[in-house]
Image (cartoon, rainbow, N blue to C red; front, top):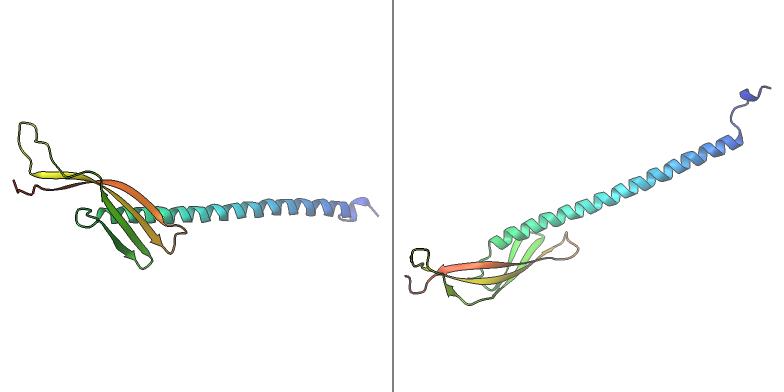
Length: 139
């Protein structure tokens, strides 16, 4: 019988299976890596969304009215905040030309944390807020 008509040999089959197995391992590793990157990107997107929600909630806070409080954003997200006055109230300096102003100003530190069922740890943010109010004598 002719050598070329007999089909595959055992050694050729083993080499083919080894090549297919190696390619399969590389493919499985690549798929696992993509799943990991997708999960991390989804978590970062969620954190970024919550960070934007926290910044928007801080815009609603008036530290001159209350020193602390809570804001319910949705059914699974809660913002707790606390404001501390950093400086005493001072009169705003006159405008150029000697024009007097009718405002007083001070600086507050606002610390907030967002608690959510979808976050593994609370998201914390601290910022300073310049508060302005009318002078008490109304001038």
